[in-house]
Structure formats: C-alpha cells, structure tokens
Length: 407
Image (cartoon, rainbow, N blue to C red; front, side, top):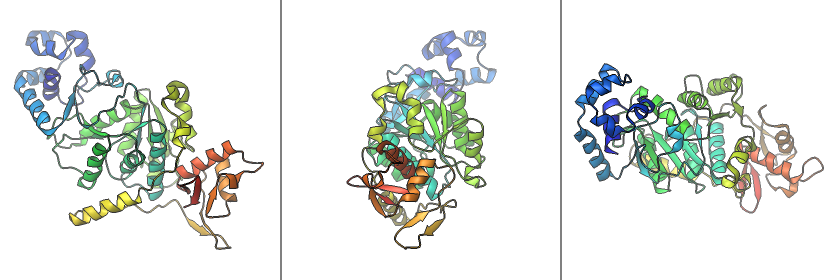
C-alpha cells in the first residue's frame, strides 16, 4: 500500500502511467526500488516525472498513511482486495483512493451515476430525487459528486429510501469546500454510504481536479444519468467519460430552448438514451444483472418526502449563519386550474410517453389508487408503468396504502 501512496504523491492524482507501470515493473514497490537508469530505460516517464520520483521520499507516504489512520480515513490501492475491478479496466486507474464511511463492494453490487447542474430547477430536482430513490430501492448504489443541486437530490433519493450512496470529492479530506453540503456529506457516511476521493488529505480544490474526479464517477458505475445540463456543465464531462469507458449515458429530456437542457439535449442528439420512464433504465440491465436489480422492488413502496430534510438543513445553516440552500424555481412547468376547481394539474411536457399523458389527462380527483384507473385502455401493468413515469417527472406522488396524489 505504501508504495502506491508514494507513487501518487510523486506523480499526482489522475496520472496515466498505471498500465505501463504494471507492464514494465509489475508493482509500485518494484518501481520504487528500481534505479533511475531502469526508470529511464522503461521509456514511460517524462524527465520531470523521474525527477519527482527521486525527490519524493517514502516518508512522505508514511506521513499520509499516519494522518489517514488518525482521521479515520481508509486507504484503498490496486493491491487491496476491495479495489474495484471496474477501475482497473479504465485508461487511468487511480493509484490510491481515500475513503470515509462504508466502502461498497462495487464488484458485486451495480452502481449508477446521477449528475446535473447545481442550479437545477425544482422540476429537475424532483426528477433526480425520484429516479435516485427508485433506482436505489431497485438495487443500485447511487453515485454523484456531492455538490448542491442535482447531486444533492441524487444523494437524498438513495439515503432517504435506505439505500447506499457514494459521493466522489474533487479535493482531499480536511479541505473546507461547499460548506452548505457539509451536513449532507456527514449524513451520507452515517447512513451507510461513503465519501471517496483520489486526492490525499488536505489537497485543495483545483479546476483540473473535477476532470480527474469525474472519470471515477463514470468508471464506478454501469451508466450515467444526466438530469439537467447547460453547455459547459461538468456533468457533460462525466457523460463524455462514460462514453469513452463504454458505459451507458442516459438523459432526462428537457424542453427545447431552456438553458438548463441545452447540454443534455445535445447528448440525446449524439446518441444518449432518453429516460421517459423507470423501465428505460431497468430494461438495459435486467438481463445483464439478473436478480441483483428489480423494478418490482423499486416500485414496492412510496417515496418519502425530501422536504423535511431540506427544511432542517436550512434551519441548521441559518443557525450557523450560512446562506440557506434554496431550490431554483422551475421554469418549464406552468400551473393551470380546472374549471370545476376540484383539482390542480400541470401542463405536460412533450417528452412524456403517450400512455402517461393519457392517464394523467383522465385523472379527475386529487387522491386516487391504481384500481381507480383500470379501464379497457389501461391494464394494471400499463398503469404501473405510466404512474412510475409521472412520479419520476414530478406530476404525482406516492402515498401510504397504495394511493397516489396529484402534485
């Protein structure tokens, strides 16, 4: 372990020499013990990299490991039994991972990445939360970047439904960054999830660090879902990494012309898979993953509300005199009231399926059950599918006792 940490200290996170080091030296220890001549003869390092290896003593790695032990940080390297196989197969595997919390068995349990803009609309936030919650209940680990907005919704969806969620950080532990989400990060660990970073403790945030981090988010997962992404969004980098790694890219389609969807809709034009209902994701993996995932389990119970968690967090931030977390108002949903004044409905976006639109349009009361919707046009399977889609996009919500309510 110490030699991989030494190598990371010498060459930095995101260095792309892993596969050639294994080919030429077999282990990091062998590289450490090799002479400068052997390192030069290997023809895999630049002059600067060789100088940095010479200038980095093993005691530097010892200091990092001692600090990690003191702070309760677990260190995972390529020779660790729990090092994920999926990381060994990418172009740039990490030399070391630093972990707080319960590191999942990525070799046995499938994970999916959910990302999007920090300035997410309320509609996008609900989509990310609902999708995450359902995927989590269906057997997936939820991976995201720990930021405000879309990432927060994704983490909460898994956490509040009792699932595992993992936040990938773009800095080392001990660095103060995104204080608004400090409680969320702590709760992720408390709930059985974990925080992961490739950066040694006290490594500050840099612009390049997000590129280094994002490749791991896609690498640890079978696919990446983009919720809302304007041009220039970091979530587009994660999607690009997923494509390069041969992973699936899914997109929740958005109304054309809205800034928050310009980047994500571009992904659809480039071949990403649209998510119009929960089955659009589960159908991609049911054959490959077997009983590790189940859409029936995903839909077995109502989703809890995230509102209480957000409200408590806002109160805590105000008490600590930090700016409260607020959701950006939705810009793509208009509210209309029926003439009989009995219920309030939303104008449906074009990207909903035909069945979901038909079912929504026939709803004539605020609270209803599946049995209320049975008709010659809709059997129970079609109803469950349409209701799942409407819940995913934030038009209805689940209630106890198999009931639903318009939102």
